Every structure is written in structure tokens, then in C-alpha cells.
Image (cartoon, one colour):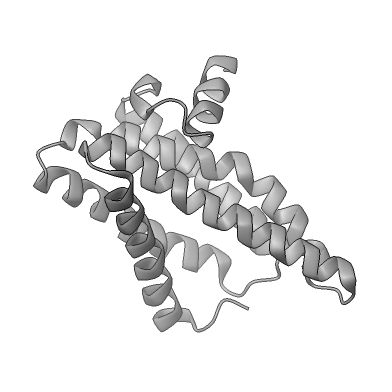
Amino acid sequence: MTGLLNALTQIAFLRKDPSGLPSSPASVVVFTAAYLAADLLIGVAGHFRAVLSRSALELAITLPAFWLLLAITRRGHRFAQTVNATFGVYVLVAPLLAALLLPMRMSGAFTLLATAIYTGIAIWYILVVGYVFKCALDTHLVTGFAIAVAWILGTRAVSNAFFGAIS
């Protein structure tokens, strides 16, 4: 377990690639369940509407999109590690993001600071996902980051179309 946490931490700091993560279908199920739980934690902390439905829809988009992207580029064998790295790092940062959402719901000077930190962590997470795609696709970080941004914006747009704005 500590080896897994260490590997995810190293990925989060852009020091190691996802090749050290498990690559079994069972690990994808575990990481997906952990991602869903982390998303629910953030949704409850932020008082977001339709958290479970929104998360399920985003997963229904994300998993096939990741698989298709990797299959088109003939790197389908990296699907499990790509998903595990993306979802695993999210699980690591979710408690911090959830804690920052609480003061963001209040008013005052601390709200601005919490919002700035939350935004910085969100951008950093997108960079980490870009790094994961860079490693999975054997491409440049800019390309990976562009894919990560497209993934975030695309899933959010579809989610908002179905459920409305997040809060």
C-alpha cells in the first residue's frame, strides 16, 4: 500500500511515469470506485447538485474516451495504468479540495485565499493528467496537457448540459 501511495505521489510531482502502477482490470475497478468516492466527498463538501449522477455520467464518458484515445494511438495496453494514475492522483488531492470548499462557501478574506489555492490545485491536477497522457502516448507535455484540458472541458460541458451548472 505504501508503495502504491509513493508511486502516486511521485506521479503527482511529475517525477515518475505511471508504469509502476498496477495494470490489471481489477485495479481499474478499484481506482474507479475510489475516484467515485472522492468525487462524492468533494460534491458533498461543496453542496453540489446531482453529485452521484454527474459523477456516473463523467465516468461513462471518461473510461471509453481514454480507451479510444489509447487504442487509436496503438497504446491500449497502457489503459489501466493511465486510468489508475489519473484517478489515483485525484483521490490523493480530493480531501484537500473538499477541505478548501468549506471556507469557499462562506464570505470573508479567507474565501479568496481558499479559492486561489483550490484553483491552483485544480490547474496542477490538469497538468498531472497531461503528464500522464504524455507518458502514455509518448508525446510532448503540451500535447498531453491539451488532451487533459479537452477531457476536463468536454466532460464538464456534457455534464452541465444534462444537469445544469454544478452549484
